[in-house]
Figure 1 (tube, one colour):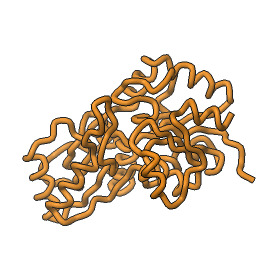
Figure 2 (cartoon, one colour):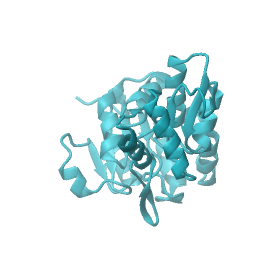
Figure 3 (cartoon, one colour):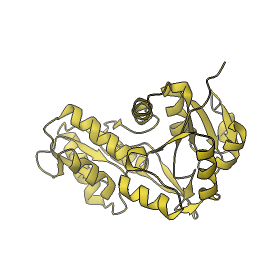
Figure 4 (cartoon, one colour):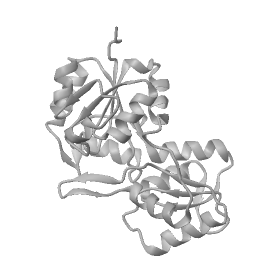
Length: 259
């Protein structure tokens, strides 16, 4: 018998919004989550924003959240590097403010010299020279970390390039594979399970990407739900070997199924 769901682990881009355009009535959706007595953790591969920024975005949709509920690939990357280099140090960063701040809070400062590691996330100001410098450092033997493998990001215009596209370019130039931190790796979900003191099957991972959200949920041992409001489609689902426990048009539809 499947354990009762006690918490929702919710991806954001493609589940709650597309390029900050809300998917459904988020105020009503989160009121229902509250009424169901479910804990919630926000699990995102997006490394461009800080935890505080996400709290403010949610507040703009009349959704109250604490920074402790936000799990991003930027902060998980910083935690991973801190475990390897407890004293911190210089790193070469391709990424936006969210990644820079997360790393700085763990004692890692951006530098092009004597870098302990090359860390690559989505960078809205990417330029050829950044890719070139990262490639040169990797050729010198510097370790390579990627915040997340997402190749695209849902938006009202369609799917846009994401961190995985930049990581792939550098992997191609260097012939070196990045150590990926975010989903489909289960680390963020395992951190949330530990913080909430839950067994894996007591949490439902809700996401829009089979290859990251659903794969991470399954790797962590959680129940999983795919929403069709973002990246993955019904056609993609047909090719996925292990089907999610729930499939819905959006988050509101998933809540109808589990209520």
